[in-house]
Image (cartoon, rainbow, N blue to C red; front, side, top):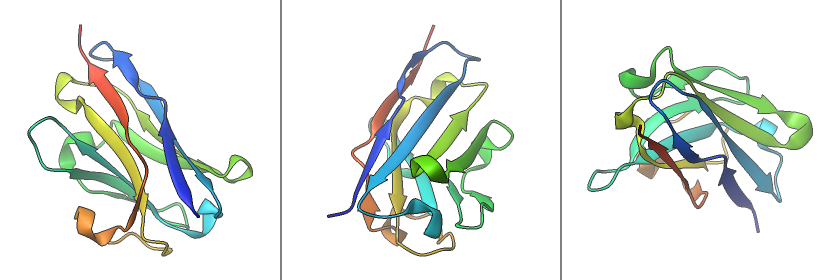
Amino acid sequence: QVQLVESGGGLVQPGGSLRLSCAASGARLNYYAIGWFRQAPGKEREGVLCISSRDDTTVYTDSVKGRFTSSRDNAKNTVYLQMNSLKPEDTAVYYCATRWISYCPGPKSGNYDSWGQGTQVTVSS
């Protein structure tokens, strides 16, 4: 059974950085687009960005443009979400997801069918 596992969340001060990881067992992630989502308390799950199998990035939400990027380490079978200049409004549980296709689907969570368990990111002083 294929599983996605996120890690790297934590507490960070405003203006700080975090790097989240999405690792997989049972599949090679380099063939597939990986989406990143987040869900803040009381809010719907929101698409953040997606990296295609060709490493093209599609940003789903304007608020992270210029601050968040995604990359891959194929040797480690891991996809990363680098988050810089973090703001309190970035506080959420972050998820990686895939639809097991090479290109990035639309930003709605329903476009993805395999999800990790999520990792908490808290931005606070």
